[in-house]
Length: 220
Length: 220
Image 1 (cartoon, rainbow over the protein chains, first blue to last red):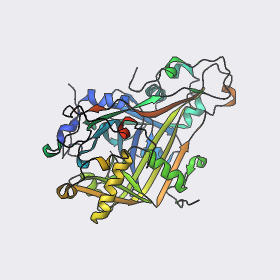
Image 2: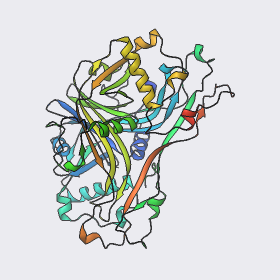
Image 3: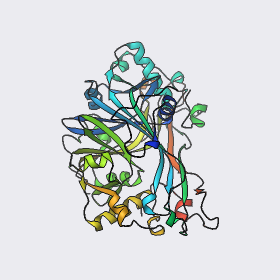
Image 4: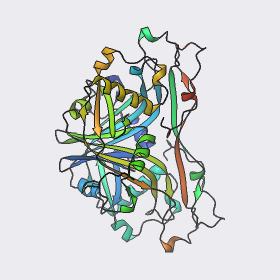
């Protein structure tokens, strides 16, 4: 099984059994997650900005306006941290102390570089679109030259990467096991509601199946 | 209406109409959000770590193991960024370029300080518990002295804070309005599933109402 090599910075000091480095685990979390949080520093102040992303093999792509402060800072190849978090449930223990959250997260350390090649840029934009809602790209008008020019795409190679996972029931102290309080897991998930048509949409245009049956966790 | 004063660092340079600084908007986003992403730098490398949090008035609290690398870095009062993101829906436009996400986010800049006062520490821990699942704290065994000692609580004052919000349908170019493609919003939300009892739980203990009827966005 292919794995990312743990580094000093990605090795879990506490609870190491929650850590994972294999590609399969890392990629499955990335592919199910909806957005990532991008961390970078500017004049000594850290910033954390949510954004969408896409993945092709071991490359992660983010995009945005060519005027974006975040992207313009990042294309200087400064150190970046990209974190992806899935919340799977609340862990309700018998003591306040042992409450927890079941989650799967990935932390990526590295730096971003601007994608200049037009073909890679289009592939990346399609990957970001597919990541958010597979099937959409083929239905819509693709980007024209002016739009491509106004869009900055950055590539972050997946090299220094780690996953962290908590699953299962609470772990209580022995002396609390007889307390008369409910304990267990409350699963959480993201669901889609009824699609809301654009007010200007002609009524004969139907909701496409990829929107009507939208689910997270499905990658084409 | 009370507001946070915009600063050079929290002023939106692009799309300023998406920005908000009033307390009501900021607090409602913080209170509905499940977790935050904490950004800080260590040896020039930014890190972004997901964690739970609580709020009491204009103070935000995070907590964790006293051995946590993140908390021990942060209690040095280094610059921190705490970001909270709610995803409300996908915005499906007629062109790839105008696709977007409806979201509400809050970015907090500042620094964290360790809570030493025992009373404030307990208040903060209760606020974090209430934030995740209101009603739980009163049902469970509260923290004992050893647990309190093993727990580090940090306080981040809400001073330099901004919210960013996108709502509504896609905004397409005039020349795309006649394209025969569905456009609109696909709402997304977090829901809870059936509670899963701890395998060691006596069967006569019932699921409490705050877990059976769990919803995000409700603050006591």
